[in-house]
Structure formats: C-alpha cells, structure tokens
Length: 143
Image (cartoon, rainbow, N blue to C red; front, side, top):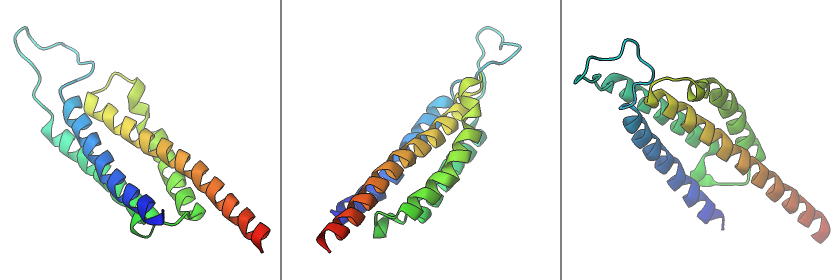
C-alpha cells in the first residue's frame, strides 16, 4: 500500500504540472480587459514570454512540493504534509488575487493552479492526520 501512494504522488505532481501548462497556454489567448480595444480585424500578439515564465513558476512550485513531500519514500508524515501546506497556503493566497480580477488568462491559470495545490494538500493533511491517529491508536490497543 505504501508503494501505491508513493507511485500516486510521483505520477500526480507531473500530471498536475502538465495540466497547468495546458491551462496557461490556453489562457494566453485571453488578454483580459484591455483599453483601448484593438482596431477591427486586428488581434493582440500572443504573450509567449509571460506564458513561458508562468510555466517555469509552476514547475518550480512542483519541484518544491516534490522535495518537501519526497514521494519516492512516501510515508504518512504529518510534518512533511504540514510543511508543504504551510508553504503553499500563503502562495495560494498571494497568487489567487489574480483569479477574480479581469487579467490575462495565463495569470489566472497560475492562481488556480496554486490554489488547487493548496486544496489538495489540505485534503492530504486531513487524510494523513487520520492515518497517523489510527496508527497510534492501533499501537496502543495491540501493545
């Protein structure tokens, strides 16, 4: 069972990053509110530089998450999950400021991705707490 969760986290983090890159690339086509509007028949240039920078930011977030959780040696560590949640909660609050504003879609994708990571870590924190409490309880009962 331990190897299953290790595999699950090793696979989930890169998949989440790939999905975020797809959302960022798609979001690049949404310029948000721009004034003055472009002349009829013209459109805005695609923000390649910003899309690449935001994709790198999400990659760094995934690497930091990977290094904190260390999914290759998965253990129900309340400390690791707590540290990861403590790191990503302020990041999600900071980056989610762009979700409600009328900004470019790639910036909104960054906020949604970081908020999603914080939410998943919160769920993992609850599950880990339950697992740790059950393990401690079962040790006391069988001792």
